[in-house]
Length: 212
View 1 (cartoon, rainbow, N blue to C red):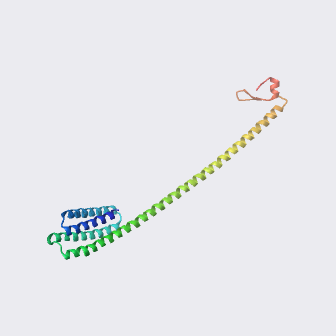
View 2: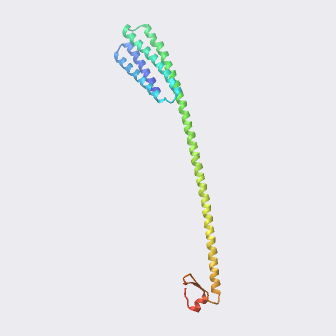
View 3: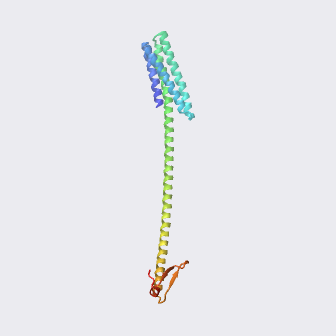
């Protein structure tokens, strides 16, 4: 994570500071400057990423204050090494003050990490509950759709049965009418509005020679 990278850069800077002080090699000083610059850039990135989180912004301001104190002390020891060489006082600053400052920085980073973890857990829980609500809504909508389909099926089945019964009654009535007509001993003829013969019984067929 970005916080881990920031601590890594500060530890590298502290290591390069110590090597420069013990050796006087300017290459270590260049590495120190690069790591300090990268640590500050990482802090700026964290500020940008948490712009909508006021508590984290305050923790980052506290962290920046601790970083500046640490960097100021490291710069001071490097300058002292350049001007006066190695000394017991300088060694004490490296061993005690430097360690105390780094411990404070790591403690503040731990606070930031813990808050970030809690925030992530809360967001994950919110997303989970939102997903559960969406799933329940989908299942409810599916159940309602199935209910409507079932009702529509019942209505359709009822209409089909009604239609079948009507057709059966019509067939029965037609058969009865045909039986009555054919059993009559006199001619029965029906025509449409244009005078065309539509139906006739057996007596009419025999009497007039009609054929179906």
